[in-house]
Image (cartoon, rainbow, N blue to C red):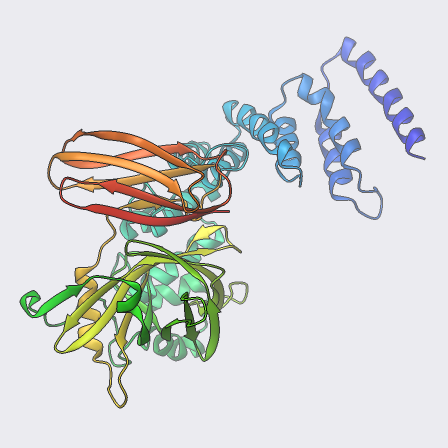
Length: 474
């Protein structure tokens, strides 16, 4: 049967070529039939090979829609070897000012599919697509600003300005969220309801749900910044070692908004570090929402990487199609132990990854206190410690695959040395030998396609200290 189909199509192509010798090919029929066979329906059997064959005559004529469809067919393939070919076809279509192809090309650059991750190029092609009339493109630029995809700086106001240029449904959704929560604009419940498509009868529920997030349910716009500054002279940082971590730490995992200035949720969390007598190893038991997980972990200096720590966390949703909880892979953190008012606090920002969306998670911050019986945690003190923690080394994407971007910022000119090494020692590479660098941001783009999967340590040796971060390659 397949041989008959192939023969029939060969005859069809022969006839098309004869027609082409007399007049220009009209590709509408071929493109329509290619889509029918690619999708499959009651009239046309699903046959991807045949769908591609229908595109060939139009590809020979450099038809931009044929290039776009062939690119999509290849990019959607399970065979990753086809992704680069698909990228090239979509790039050719975009170069001919096909607006949809320009948006597709931006998406490929955003996720590094068939190419290296390059957010700047993604934004460039999204902007071109918008100028060519693609409504989705304005939304995608707004989304980059909404979440702050490195190296684009997170900016709610710029996100809103781009969302307002688009009629794409998700642009309206995020406009509603911004007006509801006052992100980059004044709170406007009426506009929020309009953009979110919420009836008046549900308004009270919406307002209550939006105003009861965070530590204090009476605080309408919870913020990480404390109402009173803590005098740093009465606090003391303690070296983070295996022994200093031993014991139980209780507190909250603060789920922040993308600007890291508002608390979206406070999830109770408990860490228990325990040394095993039989092999002198340390395990960590993490309890989130009464669910316990016993993990092994890796550490280098004060950076800790958690192996296979997957937890489901709340996620604000105002549409049925958007889940109200998401599974996060918690990757690691740079712990800080601080003694304050005769208590010890364990804090740190958490790196996370949402596999379902193929994106990094929003900022999270751990605020834990060394547990004592009948001792309540002072929430204000825990929140104040956020001011004392920052990440010097910024990594993207996390986890990484074929490409890793390392960025840091110097507040004073000094000698620096940058290294990356695998935890097992198989990779040990100096990215920048010790040399003098000026004040400002510095960045390295690494082709990591040859790196084996595993845990990696990024180290920056400064004149008076060493900074480290742990990252994983999938």
